[in-house]
Image (cartoon, rainbow, N blue to C red; front, side, top):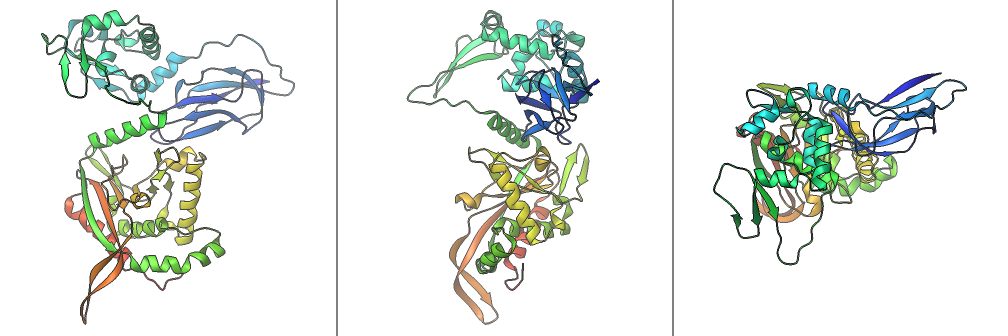
Length: 451
């Protein structure tokens, strides 16, 4: 008999850690291969972790709500014929080694205020302090600002703040032990809807501890985990990309009439309802092939053009949150294949069945704001992509039709589309050219085509 390590699986190229939501097994429980051991959550999707071996859970190394680096050992499984469970006291999880490994992957520099106490705490002569992604993530979830994080004494190398340090600080803060120290180093401020009035403004260079007060009849709603992650992702995108949005109007009458004509036969033959989304994705893919820079990302001073066209589609969940599942290699799928992918991913998203890989690798995103009645919008780029397209509601309007016989007015199905793009990579000329190419592709839809 032997022990097999169960490690936190790799969940995508950009995911470095995951949060343990729930353990389905405890020490001493039998486990089958591929049976679910625990539920985890990343900044993109929730997922299940299956067992990699059959045996008995010998030891669990992390608790629920712990943030664990990818590749860290999270449990041990005893395997082998006739193996018996040793009921030894579980050893404490190897938090520091896992933390040190995560820290070396991507350290985040921060320049603190030039106060002697902060420099002494950091243990660095130049006053620069580094925080691991794990510590930064915990600080964001607990509402700890960088100024407050700077004041936490660190026991790690060169005075760095470890996971143990920040968790101890959070525990002491909850019990009020940090209150006296905070009041000595910071000046309290009271905020209302009309003004900000510091209690003591003699030293303007000091950071202010802000206490929010609310007047009138209000309801305070705590953000759930996904909403916090969405908020951070949106703000980070605005800080990363130079957003520009262009608009175009297109006549989608041919497309609308074709869908109305074939939708019953399509569902009868393919067992799937055909929506507008796969038709939009089909047009987008054709145009990206002509303008490949729209499927790229930025890495420092380099532009990485993505040859695999993986189209993300923003999907609203029943709780009001948003997730972006990705159709991989969309350029290799026909309309039927796109429809099956769109419907399958949308159904999985709304029922919490998406896998981590379902939200990774997107190179361009489509969001259908028209499904909620909006006629146009300015979407935020889904990092690390450089562009996102929004399609508005399709409305019947009288428009001028130009023909060789002269102009006429007709009732047409009209739609606004918009493209938000990263001006670091996509200039206005290219952005507008691509947008109009998609518009023409939709306007020139072949109403006699088969599916």
